Length: 539
Image (cartoon, rainbow, N blue to C red; front, top):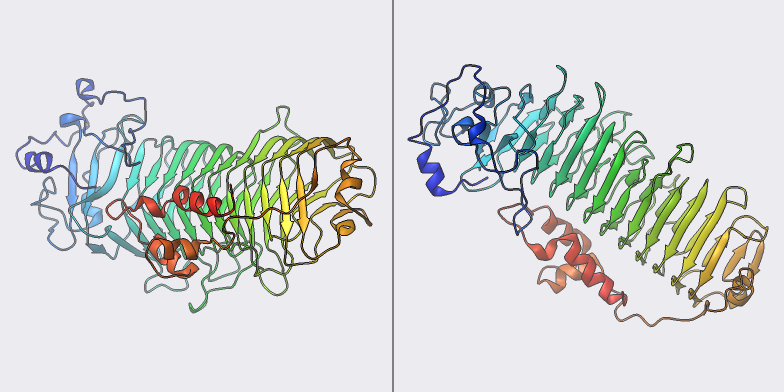
């Protein structure tokens, strides 16, 4: 974080609070200590020091000395350990690392906490240049483990990189097992760890975490373990917003790096989490799943590209109050296989959901997979509304893997499925019985440029045209209809070219990896890219 010049200058002159274990002075609290730091107009968290209660510690590997006080930018500490030693438990202290500097050490286990969610301890940066780079080698970049609850920590604007000079190790970028509350990780980069971010309620439940605008890339395994971009378990209340998750779970070309498998993902959210929101993220190039949302929740506005299984949503039919699922306005592009033995290309895989909305999603142009489907519903599916989705040249557009015992009260409205490239069905009911679980159907449209109309829909082993299919539910409005799309060639690569860059998916990924608070380009946000692509498909 770059401090305002006036405040940075004042730091040279201010009287430091004593290093003894005094109680913080409540008269210097922020405006609303029970609310998280506010978000400014550009979408970044704003931190305000709590007067003399906030000790600001500066660390610079290039200009620092551990004999310095570390309490002004002109007298910084040199090592992370020396800077961290000045942080006090229960105080809203800040540890700021100089931008452009590099440390071959880890921040280690963080044992102190802030004063409230509005007055967290802050680990961030000062000055100008690239994010401070922490090369933690075989160690976790930063941990928060043991010792009971340690709430109210914000980690902002740092770059963590693992395995430098330790290629066979298995560290994590950020590793938390402690029952924390109000954790914020924003504008950080995590790369080349086994797992970029681990937040797991091992010692107790974790509450209200936010992962915002981070770059989580190239995390992989050197063993038979399960690498990931992020692994979350035992969390009540999580927001993953505007992050870039790219190429996690595998990394070709690196010595000892194992290849893709069904256990390696970009994001893995365990069944024991609650109140999960995945919003406006890029989720790309996973070894297997882009995002496993095993505790259901909300997924909206995300771009999933070139994953083997883009989004897996799993409810829990055993709970007394069904978990509501909301999957809206996502863009799914270009599925791929895991490997030759595991053909995939699945976009949306929904299991055991009671009460859900799946609407406004775009499934477009998968070309790299050998067993693709756009939407599959399986297990116990009840009280689900599927509406306003567009499937364009993604084979096997909609599949129901269930029967009247496991499925009930499914509503279909205003969906359009068309395929001009393969001889796969557009819609399939795997059970041969009359699918009476479709409670209502209206204004859905279908078209195949390859199959004859009588083969567009499959019920068990029986093929149907649209008229025969809709008559099963008293649907008088669904029909066969080809939709001329304004520009169905739009992709992330062509969006990069439209912005003035090179045309190509990898060129676009390279630009995404440069995003940071200091170099932020709104046109590369998932919201902006999704709007441009959706426009090309008439959405």
